[in-house]
Amino acid sequence: MDWLPKPHSWAHLFLFLSFTGLSTQQRDPIINFCRRWGHQAAIVDSKLYYDGGLVTYNGDNSHENLTNPFLLYHDLSAVDPSGMPPPYANLSKNSTIPNVNGGIFWPDTVNKRIYLYGGQFYNEKPWSTNNLYSYDVIYNNWQLTSSPRTNGIARLAYGAGVSVPERGKAYYYGGWMNNYTDPNWTGPGAMTSYLLEYSMDDDTWTNSTGPDNIGRAEGVMLSIPAGDGGLLIYFGGVATNNLGAPRSQPMEQIIVYDPVSSKSYMENATGDIPPNRRRFCAGATWADDRSAYNIYLYGGLPGQPGDGPGFDDIYVLSVPSFTWTRFYPPDGSNGTVPHWGLTCNVVGRGQMIVQGGFFPLDDKCDSPAVWGLHNMDLGRQNNESAIWALFDPKKTNYVIPSPLATVIGAQATGKATVTAPKSGWENQDLQVLMTRTASYATRTPTRAIPTSTGSSSDDDHKSGLSAGAIAGIAVGSVVGAAIIIGLIWFFLFRRFLARKREREQQQQQQQQQPQEQRPEVSQMSAGNSYYNSQSYPNSNWAYSPGSHASTSSPPPFASLSPHYGHQSPVTELPVEYPPSKFAGYGSQYTAHEAPTPERTPDQR
Image 1 (cartoon, helix red, strand yellow):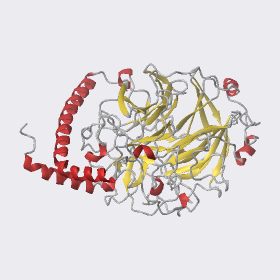
Image 2: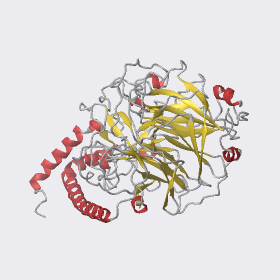
Image 3: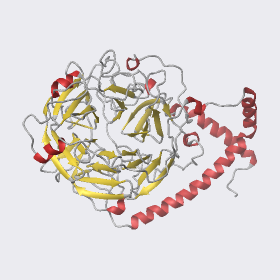
Image 4: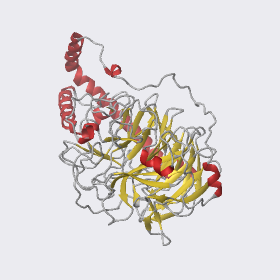
C-alpha cells in the first residue's frame, strides 16, 4: 500500500482533479457539441440511442477529430424549446466496450437490447478481439454476447446492416476489412461479398454468400414487411470491378434478399436515378395498406474521387414499382451543403431523424443548438408542406405526399396502382413475393420484461430536497471531498489493474485461436479515401441539414492515418459513477437544461 498518496497529498489530488474537470468542460458531449459522424444509432422504446463515431467540440481550440466515448440518447416522446427531442448523457459505457466508427447498432425491441457489431478504430490500435456486445436498455449495462471470431467471422466496418426484431434476426452485408479493423492486417483494405445473419434468441451466426462474389461496402440495407417474412433492400455504395478495383455501385441496381428462402434478386430501377454515392443514409416507410413502400435517401459522398464533394439532396425509391423520384432540393440540384457519414432513423413511420454527418466544404458546427438533429417530415404533414420540419412526437402515421402519389398512382392513404417495374420484372419469383404482406409469428421475450420501460421525464431528475438540506450537503461535500476523491482514485486504480490483467489474458487467448477465415474480398480501404473540396454557397433552406450555426469547427476530415499511440482503451470506470466525470470528458448530464438558444434556420 506504499503507492497510495500520503495524507498531505489529498489536497493536491483534489486540486488536480478539480482543475482537470474545469479544463475539460469544453468537451461536454451535449453542451459543447459541434459535429458528429460515422456513429451508429438505433431506436428502442421511443429513445434514439447513438454511440461511437467521431466528434469535434465547440470551444475546443484544437479543432481535433476525436473518437466519441459516450453512449447518448434523445427522448422521442418530448421536445425541448428548440423543437427537437432533448438529449441525455447519463448512460453506462466503460472501456471494455470499444469506441468505433462505421459499426452497426442492431435494435431488439422485444428483449430491449441493442447489439453493437463491427466498426473500425481511430487513433488507436485495433483490438485483437472481435466480440458482439449488447446494451441492456432496461438495466443500463453492457454484456459480452458472443465472439463472431469463433464462427470464422472477421470484424467489418462501413457495411450495410439492419435488424428485424419481429423475427429475432439481424443482418450485415459487405463491409471493409483493413488495418483499422484488424491489427494483423497488411496491405490495402478489402471489401467482402458475404452476408452475415445473427440470431438474437439463440446467439448463433450464419456466414453465407451474398447475391454474387462482388465485394461491396458503404451502401444501405433496409427491411420492408413484404414477402413471406419480410424482404431486405440494398442499394448504393461502392463495389469491385472485374479487375478487383473499386467502382461505384449503380444506384439503379437494387438488390432484394428474401431471408425465408435465402435467395437474392436484382431489379433495375427507373425514374430520377440518383448520382452514385456512398456513406449516405436512408429509411423506409409505407402507408397502412402497404401497397407501396417508400425509401427516403439523404446525402452521401460520391462513389469515386473527383466527382464532387458530396450531396445535400433527397431521393425516394418506391417499391414494388422500383421507381426513383427526386424530392429535394426544389431546384433539382445536388444541394448546397453536402455531407456524409450520417444516420437516418424513421420514427413512427411519419418522420425520419437525420443525425450528424461530415461537412467537407466549411468549418461550421452542425446546428449545435439542436445537437446535429434534423427532422424530415416524410409525408409533409405540416402547414407549409415542407420536407424539413420540427419534430412532433404525436405524428405517428404516414401519408404519401403528392409528388410520390403521382408517380406511383396512389392516394395519400395508399392504394398504389403502379405495382411493377416500368420495363417488367426481371424475376417472376420476386413479383410473387411483392404481392404478399409479411406475417410474423409472435415473438416472445427470452427474459422478464418490466411492464413499463417508458421514457425519462423531467421529474425523474428533479431534486426533492429542501434548500437548507442542499446547503448542508454542499458544506459537507467541501469538507469530505478530498477523502471521497482519494477513495475513488484508489478503487479505480485497483479496477484498472484487474481489467488490464483480464484484457491481457483475453488477448493472449484470442491470439492462440486460429486465424478467422477471411471471406472473398477486394481492395481499397474505407479509411484512406480523399475527396477534394469545392466552393459551394451556404444553404438558407428552412430546417435543412445544410443550415449551420457559425462557430469554430475542425478542418476537413481528409483521411484516417493509423496511429497506434494508445494500445488499450482508457481505464474502466465503475458504472455507479458518471463515466466522463473522472475520465476527463466533462460532466454527465441527466438532461439538457440550457436556456433557449438563439434561433437558426433549422429552428424556425
